[in-house]
Image (tube, rainbow, N blue to C red; front, side):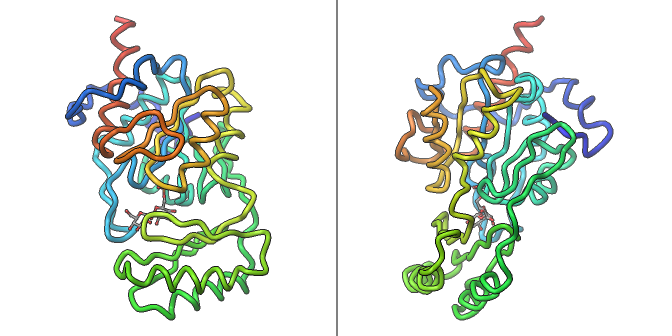
Length: 275
Ligand SMILES: O=P(O)(O)OC[C@H]1O[C@H](O[C@H]2O[C@H](CO)[C@@H](O)[C@H](O)[C@H]2O)[C@H](O)[C@@H](O)[C@@H]1O
């Protein structure tokens, strides 16, 4: 599924490109052998997997041809490609303009499953909780809260030493709550619905076309991706870590550049076969 946020998006994707900027620095892990665009479904984490981590969420640099590369692979996979991110789907659409990919946002609290581009969303966190989380964040110099509606990320990248006391304060705040949980990520603590994660997102996608019947592949770099790794493993799929091995992964791609090289390879193979 690829929503046309821009009228020429699908036509541009169909044209096919070489994506010359993404050459692998090293051979792909052995676990990648046999992965094909026409038989597999692709679940892709964004920050730290498709794009490099930056000092601030707004400071990330998206390689110029990444949207086009993802669109080309989505087309080769008959739409069986979804972004599975902690960011909101609206934020993903801005980063990957002009395309609106199938996506899970806010760690599964938002889902875009249908070709009409509609976003299904869990209820926003209650205002009292959101305000209390922001108050905790405001109590730490260099910490800031990113309110995503359905989840709040509390970022401490500028002050890593604050992590233990920040975590204690947030856990104390959530002590009586069963409906939300605190999830750690890269220099961030996320307050999010307890029942939704990247694993529930993968399960939702895999239950419907064009994902159903394909072998799922999840690529991610963080503890927040582990539910996604588990969901693909439960369906006979492949979990690939980025950077260093993570529990439940069968191979490691060195960095986002290597991930893009692998996706470039996958997008190119069927095109070559067709000639
Ligand atoms: O699930 P992901 O696609 O990996 O998104 C996870 C979070 O990404 C963003 O924060 C992270 O990336 C920032 C930019 O590189 C970095 O500054 C921050 O320290 C990281 O935690 C995003 O802001 C969050 O909302 C996402 O949940």
